[in-house]
Length: 116
Image (cartoon, rainbow, N blue to C red):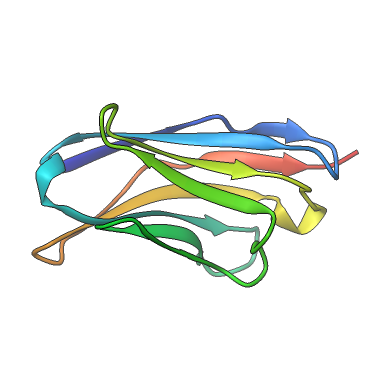
């Protein structure tokens, strides 16, 4: 099993920045992919960014050039640096991991609100 705990959400003004962090524990060595999804009110959960084992990163088109995902193997964390935030980035952000065996785990989520 893998446990994921997110932190760093909050209220930020449009154009501002926020950094999310996700700490993983448990079967760390079995993790193949880690990433962030988000779910806005009334919308489906969508991929924001992810890191695949080996360091390959992928981003949703809506966040390319504004968000950066990074991993720290020593601390077993992944971060999501979010810059130039827009009101449409408002959502609950979830950390997720997929193991080599295909099992997926989710964190409980952290709320990001972009508003003036």
